[in-house]
Image (cartoon, rainbow over all chains, first blue to last red; front, side, top):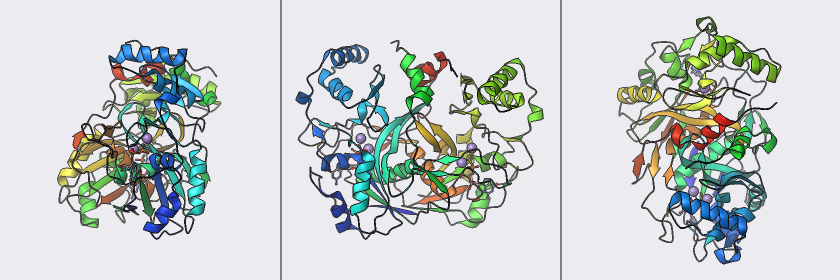
Length: 252
Length: 252
Ligand SMILES: Nc1nc2c(ncn2[C@@H]2O[C@H](COP(=O)(O)OP(=O)(O)O)[C@@H](O)[C@H]2O)c(=O)[nH]1
Ligand SMILES: Nc1nc2c(ncn2[C@@H]2O[C@H](COP(=O)(O)OP(=O)(O)O)[C@@H](O)[C@H]2O)c(=O)[nH]1
Ligand SMILES: [Mn+2]
Ligand SMILES: [Mn+2]
Ligand SMILES: [Mn+2]
Ligand SMILES: [Mn+2]
């Protein structure tokens, strides 16, 4: 298994055809996996925005006020408004805003980026990352699977790592149910979220800075002969962490 | 960047010298990263155990009784006892047992495995995985960095993916603080947990089944010119998810 960045990608602009730009730069194979940072998917889809587009309502003002108090830093209530308008569920408001995006992904500040965004204040997540992945997948020569990634925190741990927020041309997970371990016993770990592991692998090459490597090709990796599952985002009713956080109150 | 499994590793037994077994099978380079599944580290360290070693006390009996009621499946109270005895903090007891290991990792059932364990009921996590990694790192020719991995769930998401539970010879994370994005602005994502991303990448090759590939070498990956951080496991006082889960009560 091998990973390499698609070389020499320029700054991505609204309307750019990512599939064509990738195809010009690498010879893809049908069993490659193409991992694309959400930041360039959003740019190509024109998901830039400015704070002035989000005049703050009372809830956003209150959230910003509370966050300001907690952090001691100035907080723009329009940013809180942008987060609220790009979320379908608010999991917690303090000491940071954690919400669910319309497509199911739970992340801080609705995944809105303020790094690597020229000429605008904000970059919103793609509206439907799996549909974005599907479009790139269909338009790439050889139609390899495509994963849209973002960098995200993880409970119980410090730091951030990439996850898959959309995918097409492959299942999200290997389903090992019914398979056996080395001793013929039923497996304990049954659903391996390979799109998350692929996203993390690609991010080792992309990095978080000015490297300019938003697209990484994974070559000679084999999904293998397993069932697949696309069930990734927990629904609220079965999500204990979300339920617990909803009931919880931050005490500074 | 390239990943490959160390070929032909046998069933690992207590007392085996993993470093020597790896060194016999691959020519390592100093800038490789060697990812080792915790399951074989535990086997080599003799961390197998049997249920009869964990006569259940009243708390374990109660936990097992509750889990039995919730799941409708039979639950061995001795297993709950094993989990309790291998944990320093119980985050939640239902609908599954989530605890903190003595070395700080939070996982279901204290990471105790019942897959890929011959001749015994249980395989406990290594007692100090970073010390295990350090020993392997020091004993390998060329002393490449070593990561000990385990497969683990993730909040808000279905399925499981590998994480790093111990590491040596490299920092856990790239610290991007003070670096800038493509437009010269301060970065938003500042701490990239590369050991987790490396663990996930390696697990794409290892898998969860009977593949027999517990050790994966990552070649030609570059940590790069960044500061490093080893701060991985959140302490309880600053861990909001843990605080929330502690206060929360499962309602079937
Ligand atoms: N070539 C190119 N690289 C970009 C562009 N925007 C971001 N990047 C790079 O893409 C990678 C991921 O950027 P990041 O801001 O972490 O994206 P995110 O994780 O999807 O939010 C980094 O290597 C950036 O330097 C762009 O428009 N063009
Ligand atoms: N060669 C060899 N492979 C093993 C042994 N035990 C487990 N494996 C393999 O190691 C990989 C990871 O196993 P898994 O049970 O998921 O380990 P964990 O994620 O560390 O709990 C799989 O490919 C297993 O088949 C062993 O003793 N010898
Ligand atoms: Mn992002
Ligand atoms: Mn990123
Ligand atoms: Mn395990
Ligand atoms: Mn595993």
